[in-house]
Length: 344
View 1 (cartoon, rainbow, N blue to C red):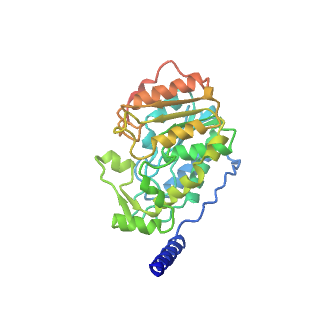
View 2 (cartoon, rainbow, N blue to C red):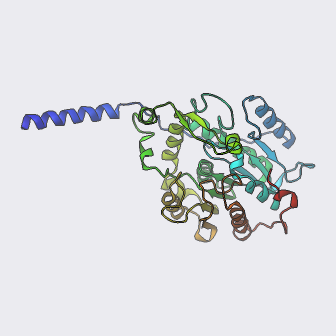
View 3 (cartoon, one colour):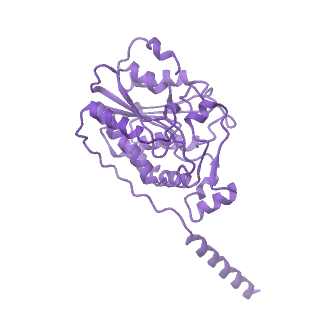
């Protein structure tokens, strides 16, 4: 019996060594060095447009771009806004809330396109890493700083995680508006994704090298990826595991708006973890008087600020506007311009 137990223990130790020595992503090395872009605003826009036009695979209306507060003058505004979309998504994930808020408050708006997003490529996300995905978010914030004296970050899901990480390292950021931030995934099994053999385990479970989705209509197919390589999820989980920590949240001092879908234990966000969001909210270094959390029980979806997927996006817009008025002390126009009530 003793020999059996000894042999069993040896086998377990060997299996543990084999598991721990398995392939896993390296801990990402992330930079937050902001550069001052020696460009006029006209040149900045020309560079953005030229860069996006060079990517032939970009799907219609997925390109990064500037939405000017005054398209005739194209000048710097007191506040600029940067919208950072989520994983596998595009700027439409926050539309029309981001454009309506920017117009209401007279802000230039930069709509980012994260690395390898919004394109028709068969092997999309195969080369995605935490570093190169974050780098495009950092560059977007850099551009936003050129567009306004002070920048407000708006993000959905992964984009909101990028915004929080940026705010932890940059005290000049005016505020973070976080819609359904990806602090952790809803599915507990994702804890294995960035661990040894994580990619191989996913391939076995999925029976494929790809994550695939059935999109309900042409708009979802246009603005969200329907298929991408599993390597992208490893990169995403690696970023989240490294950055979405209490240490990060304590460093965030700016005003924060947290919006999320939660109605009850059954009807809630099933993409990202609501409890993780609420823990993050409590751990923020932001004074209590400068932060606000709002559940949107009628949103019906993880994507709460999009006319394509949310059933309550107008309320999301209005609650965000109230935060900007009351907490940020920003003065909006009296009404939403008529043309902004039309969904495009």
